Image (tube, rainbow, N blue to C red):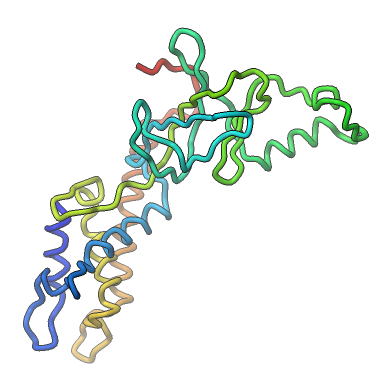
Length: 254
């Protein structure tokens, strides 16, 4: 199913003020298509709520120096196409032979707690290094602070360095009626109901009436049910494809 097909379905649920059925063209107001951004908003709400497996991809990020780099600058692995990263999942660094070494990947808070636990109650001394103060971290760790990734200790690397990340991304916005993706193929009913809720703020077709017309609360329920089904299916695929009992292994990127 395409975006154009979903638009037609949405329009079929609305009735104009003169009592005639709405058409897709009726949702173009002053030259602006209000259905397309509404459908994009519907999908973005689902992406914000859950990390879908199909939204995972490989990305690369260049760390220019010890200060790291923002994941806002990530591109799809092996190219220059920008990728909008929602959540990084893993970080790998290159080693000899074309292989990649997976680093431990932790939050800045976790790194600070680790340093504090190793230093203990030692007296602060600005003339000493962290190692001299008792920090025993010798294997590099990727640390994320907000949207910035750094590697510590940084002395083991020559900068700039390109890291490889597996990430959950935000999918590109729909731009025309011919567009298809995972949502339009497997969850068109979610996009349909969620978008109806959005555009109904202007049309006000779905309100409680004595003749039994469904209202926005009912449509909200339809949208939530459709999203829950999609998430359940995605989780089933995650169980089948991810073996969490094994530690991460080095991999070769061709």
